[in-house]
Image (tube, rainbow, N blue to C red; front, side, top):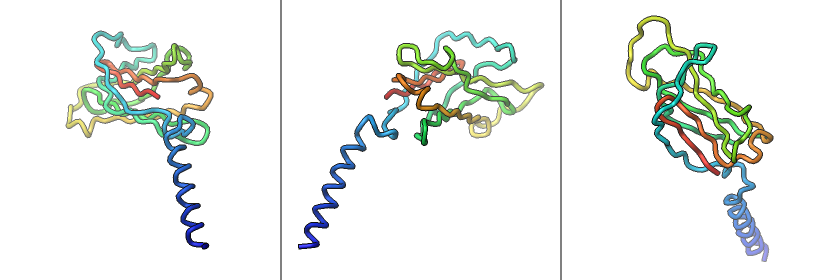
Length: 153
């Protein structure tokens, strides 16, 4: 009798976990697949600190962590040696109509640098988003000069 009872317990536990894995309460389900939006005309003017929008956003990833999530974005500048990258929040990092928006800003190198293959130009930047910041957020959007990547809950 003990083995059937243990087997039944394991099956019940797995059934309960599978329901939780599809729930919106599960942090791993907070955001789904990333989609791309082409940007026609963006104000790519440098900010006061001299940083401009990165040329292209390649990847956007959100990893759940205790107390929030980590937003990790990979960008591709026109050539090598770009530096001082940051995800700059818009609207004081508060969601507008459920959309939390960032711009991927970066400083250009001084002088001529080689263009190189795309893998050698990739720049990765991350930002911690607290649970308070994510409250009311349905969409996260990160913009570059030519495109934006969007992920939705």
